Image: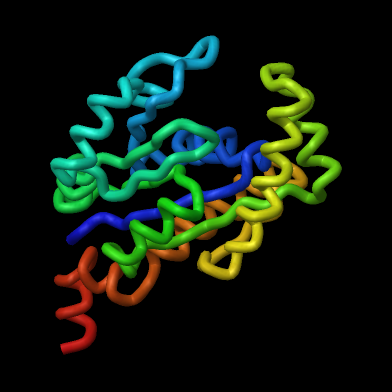
Length: 203
């Protein structure tokens, strides 16, 4: 049985990374795809944990060899998802989660139409600005640019299967866990997972 592919997208500051981290803590059956990026590590980030950090020349070489399931340039930096790793994990029956933007989601779903898309929204633009400012890592100019980008990103919400409004973290986590659990209970998944039971009960 092939594993599921989940896509979680959101504008910067909506709480996507925190939600994904909490999901992985609560569900050991999901593996997070660690993207490649050309941006510099932020304080506290480690190679291979948050991202696989690389230089632009190496990144371009990987893209040319078709090693990325998807890749995009965001805020002047390149981000890409390893195709060989994703395919190997899913072939082994393990669920995989991609934490990518809407551009990457479009590319992935063209190749994996059954991928389950989840978009995380902030409760308001004012709250989104407060969260971005509260990080203390970006200048006012960068924050303004991220807010403008967020408006554009949120226009792509209709392309996703599920929408979670992250106004309260624990409730949002519960919603995300519900999406994962419900997808595993689909008929085709249960039939593959419990083939003998189905054969006994429905013969």
